[in-house]
Image: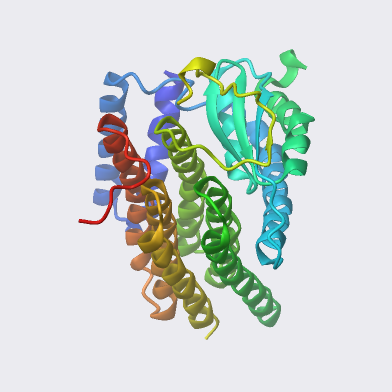
Length: 161
Length: 117
Length: 92
């Protein structure tokens, strides 16, 4: 029920941003249609914690800026590699261990790896992620597990620490 | 104040355009498909991010800025999904990356070592 | 003026991505270039909205962002279900 309400609110917010006309009729139509959409979605059984982890929003406030900082740092590294005439790449394939407990945490970790330029998660199975990194140093940094611990902290919060 | 915002958004827009060009130049220079993925992800993250921030600064606190932020959020959520799907599909189709260091010992997660073709 | 400069930069990189799509030795290079072209097209749409002072372009950009993911996944699924082709099929 909580996830149903939050899905309606987010859908309605999306409608309000896209519409830009704030008359009574249009706002009521928007509310009705977002309710209808979420009802259809709940028949598909996609309105649950996995699709919609609202309890993580509080911790996202520090996680997202941290992720953006990682992206900028490694993005500048990869840009320097591309612009240097000798193209100093050393492609590496490596298996890293993921310590997240839930599927949401695992997806967050795999997507964080992919989103950071220089590393791409190629395959996920159980708690093992195969990563393709553009430099050997980048793969070693990832294997040290700094990002893994941060995502675990983001996912687990109080109890997992 | 107006002038400062103008200068800052200039810097962001130029940086964004530069990162887009760098990313696609990387796509031309990289030797194989898996390394090109890394170059393409620069366009999706840094190029897109800097350009959107520059545009948001110009738009100010309006509906346009909200739409731009929605675009940025959607790209940041969808681009890793597309990249991961691409890498996985390429690996499963039998395309092997050119490697300098193979730390996996031939074992790729979710795949039997014997089924490597 | 500044949007114009950024638009030129994005269009240059769009051209480079298009060259990769045409050259790309394997199918996946082409799909990757297509995905990048999609992202760059979204940025071009947003920038053109600013250049011409018509923010309606942003709605198209949002739609295109979503279609870009669907398109990439659809192409990949199609080729996953059909026979794998590596390297890409020779030109007809």
